[in-house]
Length: 158
Image 1 (cartoon, rainbow, N blue to C red):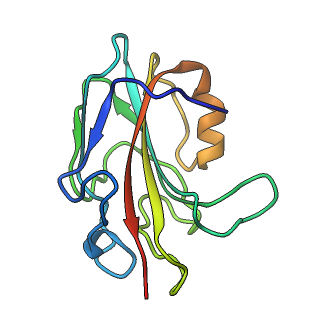
Image 2: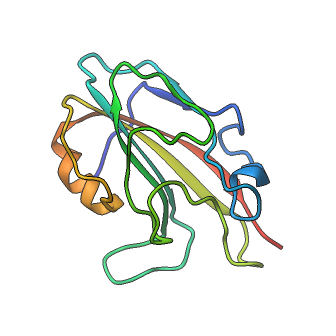
């Protein structure tokens, strides 16, 4: 599976691209999702999906890599932002085994991890059940992705 980056931009008021994610948005803090906003949406966008993935985490099982922290979908195409701690839309399951956001919590002493927040623009409004994993979601929406971009935050524990 692959997506080419588009002109769409994804930003957060909580951290800069490539910058550290504040403790408030991690498993060591309040574990609340950061606010997100986007612009330069592709024409024909009817919905969005958002994923947060840590590719620096140790392998989970054969055929997968990293650790999924958030799977959110069913975001209407008219949306341009998500508030901090968003509880709307359809929550998928993260690798903690929970629905919703689970913030960074790399193993102590494991170095700096990179957290990729991916925004995917879709040309459809698929009716998807809650609780999809990242891989299930990507399998279902890949043919409808018309734009994608990412925001990367970092976090480490001593």
